[in-house]
Length: 116
Image (tube, rainbow, N blue to C red):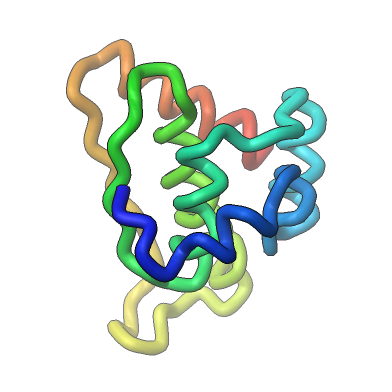
């Protein structure tokens, strides 16, 4: 991941509770015992929450999936009550691709744990 312009962001957030997330996501992260973000999460989540594009590269098991799911879920939750995306005049939705079925299943379970 290119960190140009992101150094300040990655140094500021040391706990998931410090991210600009809804109470639902913060509570569910805490319930799932997620306290300290991994380096890829520290660098990627805040810029993604700000609507910036991110490109990250990290080894398997370092939390990349959660790093991109949290900003997606945050946006979907924020627009849930509004119903319509003002730019596209359509309901907001998101598509997540997975390399194989086991990863798709883990991603689905992660989403379920964060929103229920």
